[in-house]
Image (cartoon, rainbow, N blue to C red; front, side, top):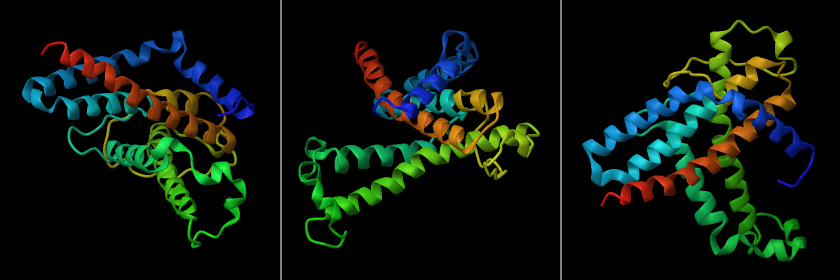
Length: 219
């Protein structure tokens, strides 16, 4: 993201919810996730790649959204995996440079036109990215709403759907800290949603190499 009003607002949100003074509530999440991860390694050490993926993605889901992932085939981790595969294998393949980046006028081609495959890929990417960003954020939002009687005055211009939680255990998180702390306008909700999805996308992938290096050091 270019340096802009959007980036400044979102950076401020990250500092507020993840600054030094706000870290303590996340310590139990780290302990719980690490214990579960070690148990998985003991039970089936040969599946360490799957366990590392579950731990990295699951811990980030806990910290960012307050969601505790299911032990097997978690729905949010599945969405994140599909999004990451699509983004890295289809959007960023070949260095992430498309012909339309070099010849911008191609953006005016209709999507059905030969050579306009980038438009169809972009449309698919938009749908998957919206799902990736919105699904865990809706869980966090609805969890806050179900735990607290929140009036419309506290959430002006932002529709709330009090959906039942299908799975997972709600805990304090990046999203809940921000959603409970102030009036939630549509702009603030969008900032929280896209900031949290960026944190999830970045941290889940950055944690896995560290875990693998640590595991392989014991071989």
